[in-house]
Length: 614
Image (cartoon, rainbow, N blue to C red):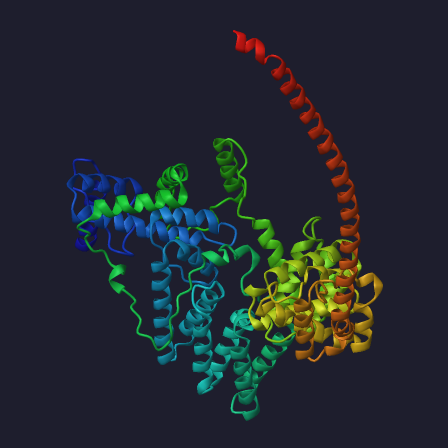
C-alpha cells in the first residue's frame, strides 16, 4: 500500500509538472534515435538555442536535420525521386541504402560526387565485412546496392567483376546463390560494357555446375541464370536501368573507380555531431550552391514546404505515402504559370530518348528481320529517318569486326522507302568527308557496310560522285576507305561485273572522279592505286588512254598549230591590205601637207617686198 501511494504521488507530481513555458529552461536535446520531442517544444528549444548560439544550437539543428532526412528517405519511390531530390538538397546530405535509391544516389552524385564516393566506400566496406563474417543477409543487401550503383554508373563495372570472382573463387552454396542474384541485377550492363568479363563468369559457373560440389537447389539456380542469359536480361524484366529511373544523362555521369582491395575511408566521424567553428560561413556557401542548382524561387518554396514536413516527420519519423503525384503536378503547373509560359526543352531530350530506343531495339533483336519489324512498329516520327540511318551506321562501326546483320538491316530500310535511301546516300557523303576522324576498325566496318548497300543496289551508285581519287584530294584514311569499299564490291559482284558497272555509259558522270582523265599525273595515280590493291583490271581503259595520250597530245598540238598558222596567214594578208591603204592615206596626207607648205612659201615670197619697204 505504501508503494502504491508513493507511485500515485509520483504520478501526480509528474502530471502536475507537464507544463511548458517560454520561461522554463529548455530540455536537453534528445540523443540520436532517442525519445520523441513534440514539435512545439523542439521549436522553442531551437529558438532559445539560437539566441544562445554555440554548440547547443548546432546540435539541435543537426538532430532536426537527421530526422527530416530520414523522413524523406522513407518517402522516396520511383515516381517522386525528382521532387525528393530537390528537397534533400535543401536539407543537405543523405545516405540512401536500398537498390531503388541508387537512382537518387546517381542524381546526387552529379552535383556532389563526394557523397557518391563516400557511399561507395561504405558499401564496399560493409560487403567485405559481411563476407568475412558469413553474414548472408547483410552481404546480399550490400551486393544488391553495389550492383545498382554499377548500373547507374556511379561505380565502375570492374568492381562488379571483382565481386563475382570473389564469390566464385571458392564456390559454396551461399556464394553461388549470391553470385547468381548479383549477375541477375548487373548482367544487362556487363553484357554491353564488359562482355568478355561476363563470359568468363559464366564459364566459371559452368565449371562449378559440372564439378557437382554444390546442392541440387543451387544447380537449379545456375541453370535458371543460364536460361535468363539466353532469353535476354532486359526482355526478362532485368534491365540495367529502368526507364523511370534513368534520370542522369551520359555526359553528366561521374563514375568512381574503386576496387575491393583498395583501402576505403568510411569517414565515420560524419555520423556524429561535431561543432563547426565556421558554421555560418559554411551555411552561406551551401545556400549559394543550393540556389545555383535549384534556383532562387524553388529554393524558397522548398524552404517553406520543408518547415511543415520537418514537423510531420518528427512526429511520425517514418511516414509513408504522403506525397501526392497530382499535387506535385499542380505545383509544377503553378511554377510554369509564375514563370510566364511553358518551359522550352533545349536539351533535345526527345531526340536522345529516340536514339536510345533505336539502339536498344537494334541490339536486342535476334536477326535483322525482327529488328526491322520492331523499328517499323515503333513508328519513327516524320523527319527523323536520318536518326535511324545514323544509329544503324554507328552500331555497325562500334563492332570489333564487321557484322552483316547491320548491312542487311540497312538494306531492308533503304529498299523499303525512298526517304531512307536518300538518308543513306547523304550519310555516305558525310562519312567520306569526315573519314579521317574514324579509327581504322570503324573505317573498315563503315566501308563494308556501304559496299554491301551498293552491291545490292540499295543505294544508287551515284554516291561515288563525291570521291575524287587524286593525290591532292585524298588522305590515307580516304584511300583505305576506297580500297576496302572496292575490294568488298569485288567479293560481292566479281571483277568482270564490277568493271562493266563502272564503265557503263550511264556511270560516266559518277566515276569521273574515281577514274580521272584530266591529266596524266592523276591518271597514273589512279592506275597505281588500283594496281596496288589488286584491282588493276578496273583500269584497263585508263591504261589505253594513258598509252595513247602522247599521240593524242601530238595530234592536238598539230591541229592547234595548223589552226594558228591559218589564222596567222589571214592576219598577214589583212595587215598588207591595211599597210597599202595606210600608205596611200599617208601619201595623200603628205601631199596635202606639202601643197599647203608650198602655197604658204609662195605667199610669203610675194609679200617680201612690201615688208622690206616698210
